[in-house]
Image (spheres, rainbow, N blue to C red):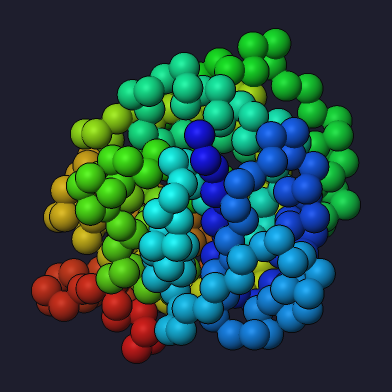
Amino acid sequence: MKIAIGIATRGRPAILGEVLAELDRQTRAPDRVLVCHVTPEDVADLPARFPGVEFLAQNPGGLPRQRNRILDAVPDCDLLLYLDDDFLPAPGWLAVLEGVMAAHPDCAVATGTVIADGAKGPGLTVAEGRALLAADTPPADTLAVQPHFNGYGCNMAVRLAPMREHGLRFDERLPLYAWYEDIDLTRRLLPHGNILRLAGARGVHLGAKSGRVPGVRLGYSQVVNPIYLARKGSFPWNHALPSAARHCLINLLRSARPEPEVDRWGRFRGNMIGLWDLLRGRAAPERILDL
C-alpha cells in the first residue's frame, strides 16, 4: 500500500515543526507527507527544514478546503492519514494502519486511539505530549479493532478507492475550523466500508489553543452544523439534537466560572444566534463568516 500523511495547518508553525519531526520516528515510513497552509507565515522556515515534505498553499483557507487540496494531490496513494497540526502519533501508527487495512479490506475509515486529548482541557505542551507517548503501553494485540461511530479528525485515515469511486470530499460549506467535518465525511463513507478504531495506533492530541475560531463563531457552529448535517443525512437526528443541546447547556453553565482558555460566554452567545437563525429559517454554516 502507498500511504500519505496530510496535515492542514494555520498559524502554528512551531508546533507543526515538532509534529513533522515526530513523523520521522514512524517505524513504517509514510510514502508522502503533505502540508496544506494558507499563508507563508503558517509554515515559516519549515520547507527548508523538511525538504522531503510537500507544502501546498490553499487560499482562501478553511479546514475542508485544505483537506480537499491534499486529497486532490494524492492520486497515486491508497491510504491517506489526516493528522491535525498538533497531533503527535506514536511511532507504530502507520505500521498498525497498514496491518489493519490489509487484514480488513472492508474498512473504509480507520481512526486511532487518543491516549490524551488536550482539546478537552487547557491543552498540552509538546514535552508533555512526548512524555505521555513514552509512558504509554500499547495493547498486546496491536492490530485489535472495534467498530466506531466516526473518524476523529485529529488522526483518521481513509481508504482512497471508495473516496474516488463515489466522489466523496469534505464539505466546503463548513468554513474555518469546520465543526464536525470529520463526522460528515466519515459517516458518508460508511455505506462503502466499515469505520474502525485501532487499538494499536496511538497518539496525543495537544489541543493547542492558537489558531482556534473565536467563541461566538464556534458557538454558532456547535448548534447549526449538527442540524445542517442531519438535514443532509450524514449525522443522525438522535445524535444531532443532543449534541446541539449539550453544548448550549455546558456553555451556559460554565459561563459563570469559565475556564481561562475558553470563551464560554462567547460560545453561548453564538449558540443563541444559531438557535434564532434556525427558528427564522436563516441558519447556514457559512453565517459564521459574518459574525
